[in-house]
Image (cartoon, rainbow, N blue to C red; front, side, top):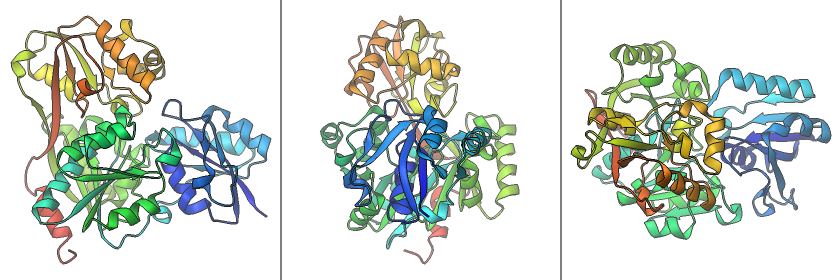
Length: 440
């Protein structure tokens, strides 16, 4: 008998799991996806062009809140949990809801969905959103370029627009970002890599993406999203840890899976974390994955002119996913404000416009920071209007992109950058060279 399936997701891992596990599997019939975490990604269709010949009408994408109803309405046999950065207890709440409604609940094993490349693959993943994957990925690219390798970055999917136009995406210039109507979240990930002179691939069908990337690379760097596991089978699996959230590495799905699979464990933000928290994370790694090589790293906070911050009332704009489902209550912008003598942080909450009010309602822990939300032109306008309406002396922009290229701000903007920096021996480069010895 054919089993009816719902795939729970957030426009990323769910699509990949469908493509590599369910699409051509005659045992299953996928009746729908559910969507959460990202605004406005439900109510769409997974198009027939991507869904394949067994789904000539495409596959509907429903709100996650309708899961129990959908199970009962369609007689669903199986629900596949397929998104990331979720507390273990919440995963089991979803499992309870599913089984109570009459369906089985599964999490597909990470190796089942990893595609094998004919190139060397180095993956950079994490145990939580906001640990510092992106800056670590950029450092890996720099190291490989110094080794004389042709390097391509492949980014975890963020297909929030027209899926038929995002099957395989290649970015090598800022013009590509404009041409493909990238959201702020996409720009945060792609722009810094492009500025290094590297190529980024992303999209929806990672089998086709892998084929394209292999044509122009000796080494592929998998740049993970949230705390998800790699889509490509890595030759070296680097996992980043955040001592500001010590203990989270064993409490979130699938971050704990990454902990257990890591070849290299990077404990990041050592320069700003409490030493006892750094030690706590180190001991957790040694206990659960003693084979992993451990590296200590700093997240170096860089400001062109720190004197502009001193004594000012500042509005801090931080990376969106880090503050929302990443659950951080501060980031590089707050660290810069404290380090360089800001008088106070401006509270954006009285000035929130449109969808940003909904964001703060969903994530009340954000407090006096402003996440750089921009999943649609309307939300980018909400962000712009909120910034301009907030009384402050200047804006501290700690999103990885040039914010002023996306929104028009009527007050001074000081950009805060953060980059990977080795804290001690062994260095990331030394460990990568050792891991790849004889393999390149």
